[in-house]
Image 1 (tube, rainbow, N blue to C red):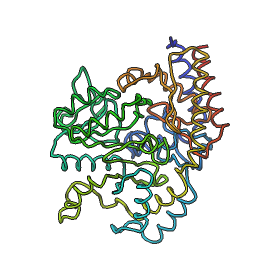
Image 2 (cartoon, rainbow, N blue to C red):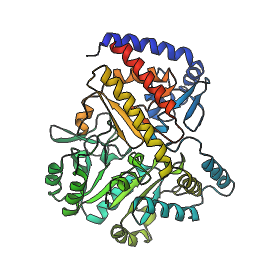
Image 3 (cartoon, rainbow, N blue to C red):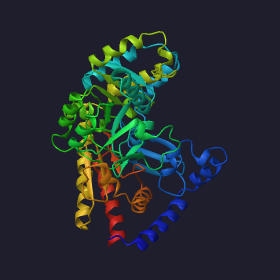
Image 4 (cartoon, one colour):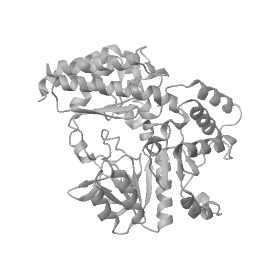
Length: 447
């Protein structure tokens, strides 16, 4: 059992230490409140540990420096957006060159051809389109799926994450589909748009899809935003067989599971989706996402894509696939997220996992640490089989202390959960430093 009074006292000490060592960030945070809602330019930035967010000075490789001059081992990497490592030289050069030759013109560039061919090589799907974010890509794919099948609903996994897609903010409560806690301003009742299934429950999936109203199943091959929940042996094969038998399109969202390798879990595990979405790091930090599809799906979309009213079809966008983003993606995919990069990053994640596991074992805690490729995460329960089990183990107070303890000792973890992401720019010494800091935190908490 965790002594909550002890936890509270440690957190108070860490909050004082944070405020004392980050005066400039504190000043900027106070100024920001005058013109930025909640004092930040994007709401999620309020979730960082500490009484105010750190303000960025610079970041390079696996290091980040704040405006107070404090340097961090960055295990967040922009919550996957900088999985390549920060400020890749090739991307910086490509962006600089493109910025002087036209940034956005709503015309295709030859870089778009190269990037689409590279994505096809990595993921095995022949046809591609682009979006500004993976959220947009998921929205477009859901629209296409409803168009192709004539069915009104989509299906997702309980406690899934697919960006800010309205239909995906749904969870199960006593067998009913309800909005996910925290959702603001839902446009319609999610029970009208969405079927929700438990991860690793193929029988429930089969029963629900048999009703015949689901256009597509949008899923991550492993849950990643509620801790890492891995698929049971044979589960993903069963998902593919069930969706195909019921005429439901299978959409794999690889935005987080790209950590499994150059072609994500799709290539690493031999998956066979109808459509696939990937985003965040593919342009080295410049906003870009992509969605690929089989030739059969593409054949059903070519007529409307070439139609006179495609600009009001609910897909695309003025800045989408702009020349700057495509140049950045070509540079990023040419020089990062390759086999040789994962050959460095994945062993670091393995070392992290072993280090955290050793601390958990030493204290006989009922926690676990899970790894997926170059991504690893600890969670305050035994390994869960589905999102509901993982969600039941959320401990905001405990998580907040461990995050702030790490931050105050020069390590950034991903806010919202306990995820560490590794790039080729990290080192074994970085991993060992985290193990040391994590061990000290647990020692202080439980003795």
